[in-house]
Length: 112
Length: 114
View 1 (cartoon, helix red, strand yellow):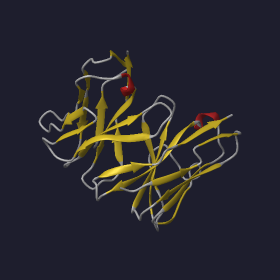
View 2 (cartoon, helix red, strand yellow; view 1 turned 45 degrees about the vertical axis):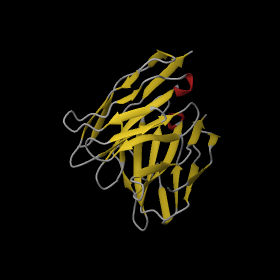
View 3 (cartoon, helix red, strand yellow; view 1 turned 180 degrees about the vertical axis):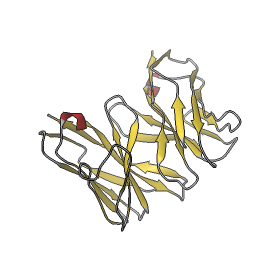
């Protein structure tokens, strides 16, 4: 079946530090992979996505590469800002774009 | 991509009562999804709603507690029935957007049961 395993949080970083949030998946077929962000008190926003192996999704300085060989989709940012403080969710969808499967979420706090 | 209007954005309800949450989409979509996000937790799928058929519920969720209507391709409602404090959560609707190969989410309904 489909599932997503996301690194536990919370993650606390100083401004301008490097960020990695690990995400691995189990899936049948050819899934699409997503990172969503949830700012305090707000709904879910799509951060980036990748629909096939070796695709790199990027947005707002964040990047993630769809690695089929390691079944991973790790989120990275070279220099985080205080405004990046939020909860980040890794998610997977099957090839027919049915339901999403979410990881547990990782709380990121960035201090000035 | 599709735009979803979800109402209400928040509510405080008495235990034993029911609340109906509405999602209106600005385009026709085949599948709509209803999720629950308990405090500090990830999103859990409640059910998938297809127009013209009964909703498909995930394990642990039943129609008597979470009845869903899907009268047309742009609208759906989720009712949380006979509420208890354990139902205090954020409820979100979502649709798949095949044109953009992604998903759109409503802004969520923050429910507190007292």
